[in-house]
Amino acid sequence: MVVIAGSFTTPADPHPALTDVLDPTARTWLDDSVAEVAAEPTAVRRLFPAARRRCGHGRLTGYWTVDEAARAVLLTALPQRGQALADEVTRLHRHGDPAEQRAILRTLPLLDLGDLALPIVRETLRGNDTTLIEAAVGPYAAAHLPDAEYRQAVLKCVFCEIPLARVAGLGARADRELARMLADFAHERIVAGRDVPQDILPVVGAFQDVIGAELNQALKEAELNQALKEEG
Image 1 (cartoon, rainbow, N blue to C red):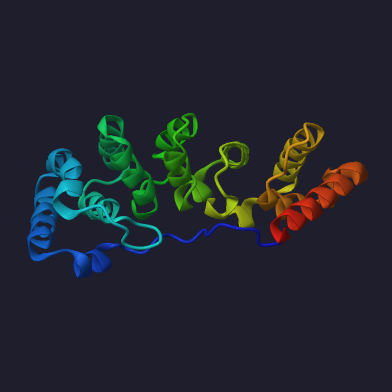
Image 2 (cartoon, rainbow, N blue to C red):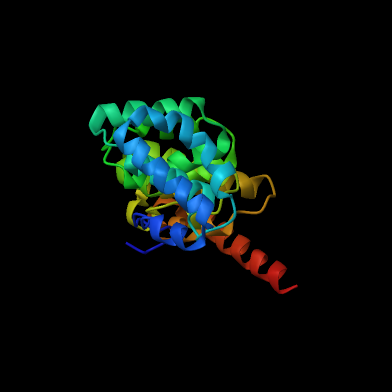
């Protein structure tokens, strides 16, 4: 299959990069908080919301902000496993603000949860916050969402104008049915005289048999028109 977009790779542990940028006061707070969470897991309920205020919120890497990374470090310090860990993470998500929820979604690939965190992803994908949706379609969703739900997540990103390059695992998981769904979407846009998002074309183009000659020609024209616009 053609590689289309989106990394499937689990993000790196952010702790080393975070240690390099935190000032001594913030670094001490985080180290003490990690020890406290490891000894008493319920302490995370108090410390997790405080991470942004104590550590900052600038960009750390292409994947993490500083506060997301600090919260990821706290989550990965939790000693629970399995359902107990899922319950704690779900509780933090339920009571968290959007920044806290984004941190949880970005940290899911680092936690040993199997499919147990899928309810968090599903709840997010039912919402309309594009920053949360983008966080939800990361490596955890790519690894665990069933095919039908993964396709719907991709379609939701298209509707919400989230670039498909930000959807993890698309190169591995794009299939004929997803191409058909995106072709139907493209057809509706063309009939309505609207632009077709260019990042769906590689997915559709990889499965020519699902779109038919008429739509194929329309897509080529749409791609050409877009190229001419960019040149102009």
